[in-house]
Image 1 (cartoon, rainbow over the protein chains, first blue to last red):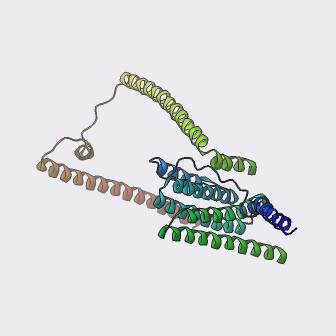
Image 2: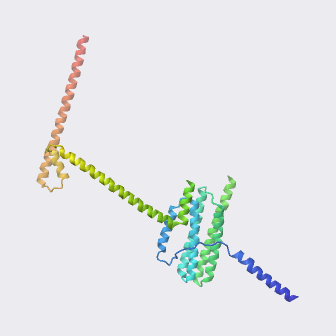
Image 3: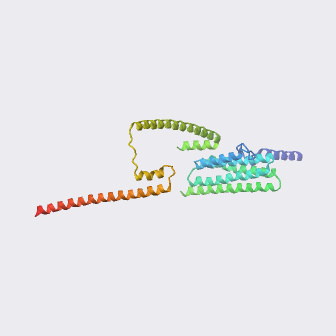
Length: 180
Length: 132
């Protein structure tokens, strides 16, 4: 009887681990394919193109969308670089990716100040992206050793701070909405 | 308008290469059209100048007088090298010419004012005589 109980408990634990745990931890948010990576000679041209595009976008909400796309692409590129074994470049790329998210926070604020409505799907996407980014940084942290770990930890912290800013902005928007 | 801006932004964000290719070809097309326009315009201007020249040839133009003013202007406008003595001589003649013209103009102005005042005085004198 005891044996059956132990087996049942183990089976239940396995079921919980394989069925529920991955769904809770892994966020279902596919990152956009980055295309050419920063180790490519043409990458600088791509960065220039992206800067031009950023300047050319008119709608502040679309700027937020663009920042999010760029952050996704750059962070995914960082992951691919770690897989390739180019850790130094991967660290730089991760920092740049998070910098795009910081730009997103600024543009989000600008959009709110110009009384633009942020669509709910974009808000959800921003939240999911922040969780996914932190998940990727955690993976990268585990994939590297020594001093390299620190950089990804710092980037992960930045990501958390940026997301906290977004939450604050949302709260302030809600409270100002109630006041009106 | 909002939809158009949204379409433009979406193309920029999600199809940047398509956007830049379209922009590139539009630029080339624009350059070609402007080039053709300029060549047509140049041809028209050339024809107009030809016409004017031919009509000018028909008209007998009097020879230009060699006034001190023309001589002075020729020093600055013509790219010929001239001696310092010639420049000094021409500038002195030019200043004398200017002063002479100014004196003549002032003299005529004074004469006209004098005649006008004479006429007014005569009128007033006649009116006084009539009243008496």
